[in-house]
Image (cartoon, rainbow, N blue to C red; front, side, top):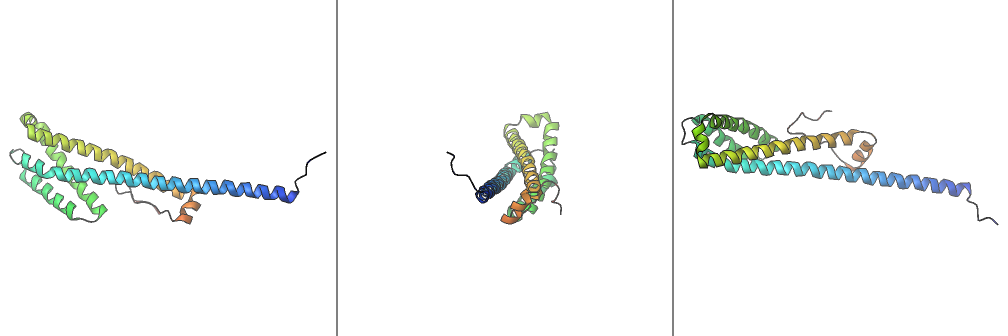
Length: 185
């Protein structure tokens, strides 16, 4: 004796149910991956901000230590101080990013001068500040690279089909890449 046979209608309902389940799992997985990507971008951005704040906190010590030596151009030190003030007063992430870039170029000038004079490298307090500044700049550069890559991957992910369907349905929007090229249309 055979068991009950499934009717074609039951087979069709089971098939539709399985397709719906697969679609639901795919939507949830895609949604969660976008949430994780956004969290990664925000984490890199926050670390950049933390390191830039650290750089700003080192500026007064760098200026104070550098003012003792004639090799450091007074205008450069004044410009660094001015840019630090602008950075701290700015509420715009884009403006702070631009100011930090300008300041990085000035700090590079100080580092070049520092490295050109061996007796400056022997000065303990100045050396300590320069080492801290170089380490901070390296951490910023590393995090910027990670941030750029994370934004690029996220923006590509929300534009590709079929992920774009989930991104549009749940309001995931393209993120601005403050350190690389601007997002495209």
